[in-house]
Amino acid sequence: METHAVNPWVAAAYLVAGVCFILALRGLSSPATSRAGNRYGMFGMAIALVTTLITHEIASLPEIIGAIAIGGGIGFVIARRIQMTAMPQLVAAFHSLVGLAAVLVAVAAFLNPDAFGILGADGNILNVSRVEMALGAAIGAITFSGSVIAFAKLNGNMSGSPILLPARHVINLGTLVLIIALTAMFAVAAHAGPGESPLFWVVVALSFAIGFLLIIPIGGADMPVVVSMLNSYSGWAAAAMGFTLHNTAMIITGALVGSSGAILSYIMCKAMNRSFLSVIAGGFGADAGGGGGGEAKEQRPWKRGSAEDAAFLMKEAENVIIIPGYGMAVAQAQHALREMTDLLKEHGVNVKFAIHPVAGRMPGHMNVLLAEASVPYDEVFELEDIQSEFAQADVAFIIGANDVVNPAAKTDKSSPIYGMPVFDVDKAKTIFFIKRSMGGQGYAGVDNDVFYMDQTMMLLSDAKKMVEEINKSLTD
Image (cartoon, rainbow, N blue to C red; front, side, top):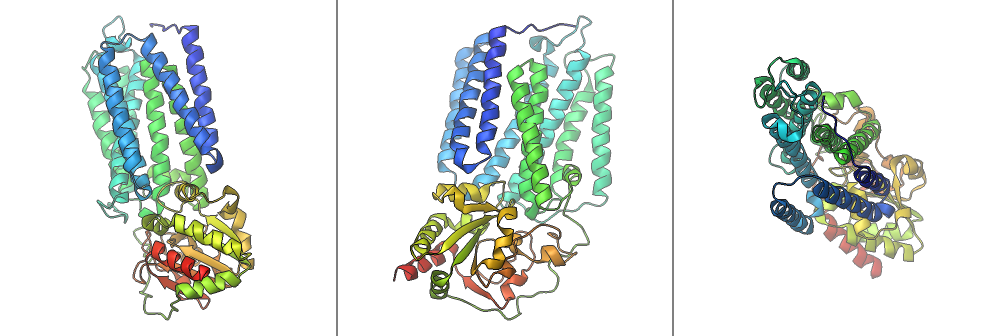
């Protein structure tokens, strides 16, 4: 078996890059250090990229640099133009590209193994390399097709509701078992020369299919966990291909992304009272018998409030808790909301923000928006840190959120969000709930009893416009 000696200086460079990636993940764990985390990640990637280009035989360096320039330019333009509301689907799209890249590298290695140093003396691809290649291609294909479906759901190109196929769990499990079995057969096949074995192509095709099948049964309310899980898959795909390419930096980076994504997914599943294993299996939170919506409740009596009502009661309040959601992102209301909090503080009001782990369409979506609006980090609290304070809150101000404050998660076993921890906004003395109309039922498609509570006033308007009207009343 061929060995691949590693230059100690190259190993040291990759080690430094790996440390930078670890520091990047540590920095990204908090909004206060996220900028530094991004810089560490960029610096580590620059080290890994330059080291790889210097130490490997490159057929055409100008072509490589040109490709990097084109890709970097496209990424720069997209990052500058993208709206924060579209960030979740952008992340899903980027995950799909990582998965597709892993598949293409695996295909290149399969067709020309000698160029990768994985062709044995007997003319067959090395056995261990076949396993690495097949796993990298399989995980990459699952990541690609799954991310494409996630993008379509998040971007509105297809319904966010679960698409439930008959016997879907049997189909999914059977397909996964078949992929593993075919990978094992490919690894021990007697004839596995360059591009010879059709088993490889079958594994790739089935993996594309299972990525599609795993994501379509998942509803929109659970999409933040899907994005996190696909992030983990993309990391494992990169790590597997790192072994094929004998690239330590890819192995380290892929393992870090894969493990951190899996840990984040586990934390989010715990926050939503979901099973981690059911995330991997696909179709969690999507029960064919779960109606979720129940009978129509829009005709129940509710109270309509005004900007003047909200301004007066919040100005007289001692404690106000603000719960932002995706509706705030859509309306781009975060800056007006920050202005409102500043005005309330001038009146001696204690203002805090409550962030649910799955608010928005991806992990940390609300934190990023509030950080963009320069909301102080010490005023932003996670669910477990602020849940007990709703009983002492004079006002719970809900802007664009729905599912994360829906008591059906605690009381309605038929609801698709049943079991998900939600904010106890019903314990606040007064609730102001901003939404466009009474007809909307949130991303999970379920009605919300908070709309009809005695202490709730509905502020029916565009979120940004309503907050700006409240700010005007606060300054009058």
